[in-house]
Length: 528
Image (cartoon, rainbow, N blue to C red; front, top):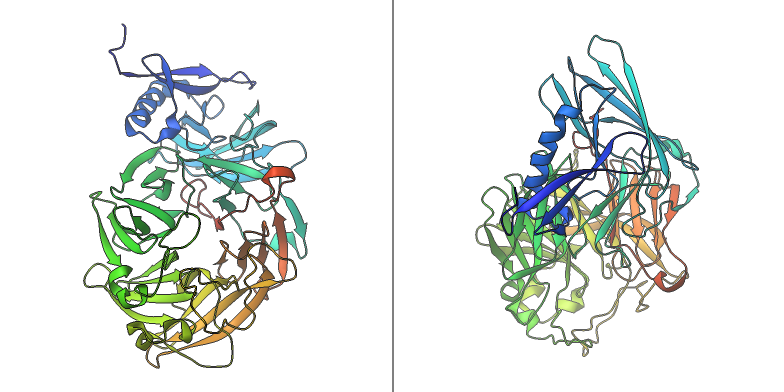
């Protein structure tokens, strides 16, 4: 039967670089190949139907159905399915030349006891990999299966192995994969590295970086285009997409407890950029602008002007957002003003609760009275990124910590007439100067007293822009973007291991916007 015009057709093909029947799925419309990674749901659905047709091939743990990256979202992920006689666990090890073995327990996404369905993560791009699986049924004997495949090269052309320097005990590194996102040289890909610095997974996108990953209802929420988000399940299947009409996303988003995504955005109809917050409901797919800083800070904005070769009105430049159920509030970071702002009642009648920053920047404006008082003798931050609120146990009500990557970079391009002082220790140097230092910072905010205090600081490699820190529950992850290096620190703030991702030649400036570590428990891997 000849397919109707415009109809999608999916066919399973044998992947030739394997010693067993490893399949790929080819999707075409009118004879022309369609990339599954385009996030079109009709493409995902026809792939789903093809996998269902193939599932009779997965007759047992020693004769599984294996499909390489069927949904087009993870270039080296292997879909695995087979019939079982009882519940059990699938442990697998990926071995490749010159790398440490990668062993995990795969998450089973089939709730029945008669079948296993999961995704095997860890195949290294461009080299020969041997994957050995062990199925242990509850109350039964284990069975083993092994196959060898030469994986396709990295779609991003990225480093398959990072330059790792161990300064402590590598066994103390926290479990998980480092997600390297926003690479200037690979904007359409997010690269996932293990603790050895080996590339174990590779997300593809549709023209925009992954700002972060947030887990919701068995799926991961991520950005895939500058106006589109997607929810992807543990098999790699795109289960929902969301397009923001009239907005372009930038820098960051967060998911609320009731399934809304608060997103930093530019309203394309406005003449200013990076100054609104949009809320997207993951259940209904509806979205709305909930915070407009041109209204909340209208008096301050009136004293700014567009700048740069593109003459952008980038007067605020929001670069991180962190939502809290406390008053439906968000903490946002403004790079241009080197300020941290808290906004209450985001989904109701939003109002700025406070501002943390250099007092002279806000002098003479309506916002001056919103500044918290500094307690202690320390300079304010400069161009900070990744500000996160931590409601730590043991703190009094109304107190919490804020952590951040303090770039220590100071420039207010939207106010060329600004003559106020710069915070001590900040620099106008744009780039990665080894003679300078950025900082990890931790503040204690006391809303009752209206104060903030510096409680911890750590010098880190300098990066004028981008970059982030992540609290790993004691240990700390720090990415200095323009220095093209990230490191995991122990709870005593000693470097355990450092990873460098610079390339020689024309791509030497390919910094990563963020590096975040995720355990992927109950998603790719069974929770321990």
